[in-house]
Image (tube, rainbow, N blue to C red):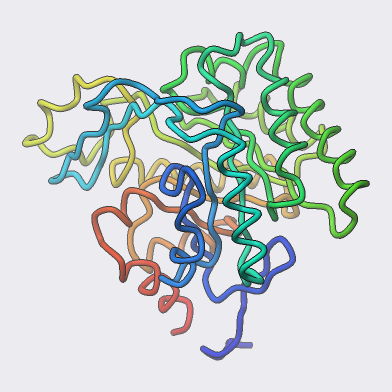
Amino acid sequence: RQASSRERRFEFAGFRMDSPLGIAAGFDKNATMALGLWKMGFGFVEVGTVTPRPQKGNPRPRLFRLEDSEALINRMGFNNAGADAMLERLRHLRAMERLEFPLGINFGKNRDTPLECAADDYVHLMRTFYPWGDYFVVNLSSPNTPGLTGLQEGEHLVPLLRRVREARDESEKRAPGPLRPLFLKVSPDLTDEALRFAVDAALAEGFQGIIAGNTTRRRDLPGIASTDQRLLAQEGGLSGAPLREEAFRNIGKLRSWMGPKPWLISAGGLGGGDDARRRLEAGAHLLQVYTSFVYRGPFYPRQIAQAFRL
């Protein structure tokens, strides 16, 4: 039946939500804005990417606006205040408010952590944050940390995913309640073979879903305006409208591999309400946005929510 505007018709991580749209990681890196973002109309909020130790990220300038293309190029490099600072903020937030929305935490490794030790960073973050998040994301897909995306394809992937899932399961015993879901965030730059390997590995190791995807290193996507071409030489990940159609096509591909049950969150170039609806119809459960929120402004989350009340 058609849900009324008063109903919360989307469910995720133990919450009922008015909207399937969440803010992607990277916007609220240090968990300073989560409550405000929810009040702006997002159905759920993902904070981070957080790393075990504080890091400054890459030198500035590191963010570039391709305004005529409604796109961004960033090489931020997981700049954040570190796990201890975020933990303090989340403790304060949870003490002050009974949150009415799912709060996700996106995990990354420190730049100076050797790739062979990357799992240690993710395990540390899981053990630290399990009581404070409603879902958790293993981010191996940022192009701005040297070698990170290679972990999606190499020999380290399955052991890393297994160790994180085991840390989640151990943490659950100390904080009883519904099992909090784990997601792997995958890159749009993977070949089909590599993408399927990563997805199959995550699901086989007990992850509940996939976030597809992240920024891209590619510069040959349609929809990049001629006036923005001069910026394409900048290093970093490209996000925004040029990724829209590829992100949509990936939904059907991933759903055919995953089957109907595992969670699929679609990110990449989200447009307006029509685009949001077609992504859910194609098989995504939920949506995330970053760049369109930057360009379309503070009313954008409620505009997307309104599209599901018609």
